[in-house]
Image (cartoon, one colour):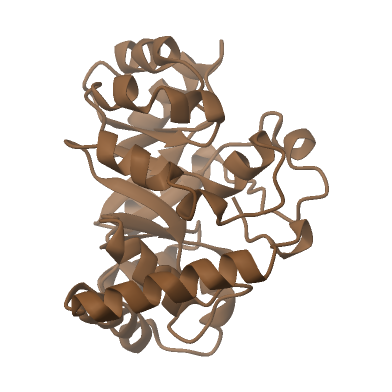
Length: 266
């Protein structure tokens, strides 16, 4: 499973990638996000174009830029991200196939384009979206929860939503959720979440706020391989262990409704 780290710290990003992470995400998404996520205890980054340039100079691995949701500003954001060395662009808050097609036209093969499925409209159109030449498809649990007016962050991993999008995604890397170090995670443990991601065939996930916090004082050259090793062990689990982990994950979600204040960053 590829691990993509959200950061604009060149030294930190360089070390985490050198330790085994697949790449870096620089996050330009902020249009309307404060209003959409008001009171949700989410993370809204303030990354700049200059941050993207700096990270390109610092990191040899994959460099991804999350732009704003589709709008009149999209062509300029795509052009700027490409000029500054982004290998891929992530388009968030997708609602229609048309906006993805228009963004693909703007990209024009100059870099990859991935999308974030984090609205019910996108979930409903997953089959059509997956027919597009996308570099990756990611289910964003936090914004999907908000779009559904739900208080349960991990419900899409229990109610079949994630598996349906995963089944539609046959030719692109599929991602969902985010991980931190083994033994961490709240309110559902990172170990149970990791087992669920492996079970659903997740091919990449994000390392965000909780990972960075849990790494304080730790050596990435020890901890990133340990995280990757735990994922490799889960991939080798016997069917009975897979079923047990799934049962425990569902119990954790169903037995403890996830309050809005407990949600991790989007």
